[in-house]
Length: 386
Image (cartoon, rainbow, N blue to C red):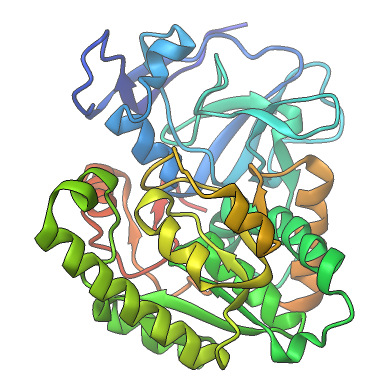
């Protein structure tokens, strides 16, 4: 069988250099199609945080970790089947599928390594053609009522949200199951996963609020029935332990912003705090997030945008009976559950009017994500025509 050679945006190894990488447009040899693999024609992708981490080589040079000179990123989106390996009997050319990026799982099905990120010898969607293992494709139901752009945005962030929400909700109910949810609040920092979880929380009867700094996002969130908190009202709410210890001016400004933030949360929740707080940011807001939790509250995370290492006082968290939930993407059955729920409840990102980056604009998308120059929570890019 012939080797698959295709045009792609490549990330090269830093070979020990920790400076951020650059995506390079060049031909990539993907090797031959193996018996359990599927040759795919990527259509739309959604730019994800793990792609930014890989390019920034933060926290690791993912190429070196995989022991590969170059890799192809992109693990969220929709694709069309071109060909199948001899062992793949349930897909045929022309089928349209959602990418499911759980490449290597534990014995229970939960992901250990992610396709086109830390799973070795896997190829992503930043490629005119790509090849993936059969289990990483989930067929999109014909006539689903949703666009391929929507399924592309759904594929990673909404599936992640579903899996995280299931655990967070059950943890809260383990202590507070007899409390009416209509009096409780679920609050989140920004991001597409958080938005998807707030939509779920709202569907389950909770009051919901999201923190944002963009007027355009504020308007769309409020139209969706989500209370907004203006992030610009707390300009110094970015915690840095070293500066907090050694810089009195920084410490004063931080504490002022934190005080204003907690006053706003108390105003919204009637002084109760958040029953569930979704925090995929990390260190910079972790201290404030914990203070904003109610007793018996749950802090839920499935990501780490700014800071992986966290600390807290175990005694205080124990006294307040806080539960800390950490999840990472989803297992296959959870992805199916998420899709089925979406079809029944119209739970889907609204992206059809959003700007879609063309193939030639991938470097600009990379830059816009890095600088926060995005309006949409779901930055889409197009690889090939539908």
